[in-house]
Amino acid sequence: MNLILFGAPGAGKGTQSSLLIERMGMTQISTGDLFRAAIKNKTDLGRKAQEFMDRGELVPDLIVIGMVEEVLNKGVKDFILDGFPRTVAQAEALDELLKKMNLSIGKAVFLEVPMSELMDRLTGRRVCRSCGAVYHVKSKPPKKDGICDLCGGEVYQRQDDKAEVIETRLKNYEEFTSPLKAFYKKAGKYVEVDGNRSTEDVFSDIRQIIA
Ligand code: AMP
Image (tube, rainbow, N blue to C red; front, top):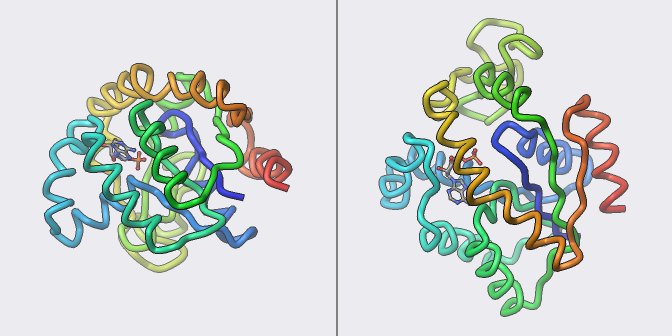
């Protein structure tokens, strides 16, 4: 089944996607990761996306949709869309793309986490620059400070996880992304999962949904 995982920044989309890849053999399409890779590789796409990302703003719809179309054209299956769509215009464009490709989304899973918790998760979040593993200064620090347990890469704080940028991201989420709940309810695909629990509890719900 193809899945959309959505929710506020810090809701756990990336963490749950990693488990779905590892345990269910699914393929993750994370627009945030794709943009970060493009920035690292200094591509045109990366240059276009960076200014928006650094400010915590959404990258314009046309750029994001073009990038997702390219990935879908490679013929992925059992995919998780993580961080896309983030606006109703993107959701509509996705419907069109999938229709053209004879594909569909089974469920749009919304991870519900209260705002107060999101702030703590995001300000404390650290990620591995090489493999993308996610850590937290309090609840899941790497064994050696600044070094990834999994690959030995550098563990750093994303520019957009700094307090001043987080505020913009959460505001944009409320304004542009939360209307997707109504969009997917109307489409009969919406499922809500309480994301304010342990990673394993959340995963167990998601696994049942896709079973
Ligand atoms: P994420 O890793 O999902 O938190 O995304 C990091 C940043 O990438 C976001 O704050 C946006 O600037 C940009 N981004 C990722 N996905 C999208 C999207 N679907 N639409 C617009 N901007 C996006």
